[in-house]
View (cartoon, rainbow over the protein chains, first blue to last red):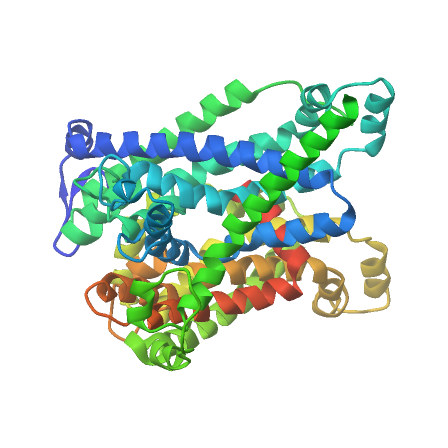
Length: 261
Length: 280
């Protein structure tokens, strides 16, 4: 379908590579791809590191406290992305939102602004809800991985007097590597796909002025608002190819010998 | 020195954990409290408790923009789709895991190939296909697509469960003259119940929350809306109207069923999530 000019309901016209040629010359597409990569990088970095930090921090507590935090921290994963978008739009709301009213309380009212409407802050303002949503996800994933590591390894390290950092770098991380890898791949797939669609569509609509447009919101607009189905399909194909390349690069970078335990 | 360092690290850890707890929980509490406030109060005082608890917000939310009927529609479509997914993928998984045939490997890869494609890559052709079948704007069309999209992953999980079951039970039953159907329904299916629960929890959570496919395939047709779509529509139009309290109440109504389910099936939720991570 990427090779057709098609408004969907009349007959399709074969136009060869034209859709792909316009795609390469489409500044909004590049803008949305760049935004997408930025969001992926920042959200991915913070959610995986924070997820790992909280996994290890909770793991040090006694069983009761561990159960408590495990239960509480999971809650953001229960809401849908639509609800996530609504909750955080309210939090960012310029008049009654928590962020601005907090700033007013502590006397920083001159910092208050429309966080989602300001091209300077919009991308960073989108990062925070997503981290809020994804940290619990990685927490669960890493906790499951950590449970598979035999306690004897840590006991042996303790006997040898290994410090906390050494334990992390030489035992925990290598043994959790498969889980970290899965989490990074998962991050790529969901943030280039449906993971950011509802939040961006509802919180900013891609605005202001395409500053927060991403690939899937652009695809949706082309197909279901403007009716350029052929062009939208071409975006979909390009997206899939980009995803494959990103996955290949990630696997390459993260490749290391499997640790047996 | 060592003791001081340990105490300091412990202190930092507890501070960070405490902060994270507040950041995680407070938005929910805020939504809950605001759902009992009048619109005016929401604007004046974001942090305080309501002066008068407005339970009428919930009644308003239920009728607002058809949230109530969308709630029922979402319940029905989630349950029916999940039931169909469970039956179909259990059958496929059983055949793949247990019936010796050389087509099985091919069948397995064929089903698994369905997991490869991101929804957005195929969403345009998918919409046009559904439209041409005259199923656009209908719950039936959406439900069928839900089932089709969920079968690969559900089958993948269940194949794993079937493979770990001992084959002696089946063989004994077959020797005793039990038919293949009965072996499946009465012996094997009860054995993989943990797997079925896992798959059910996974699908209920993702279908109850599903937005993108419903948005495209239901084509914004009047009266044919799932809960996430209705909520998103309300949100988009509510900006210009004034019933904010009802809006917050609406969020509570949507989130509550999953919170209850989580309270009961906590471990299944987490296991489903870990399994789901492989698929993305």
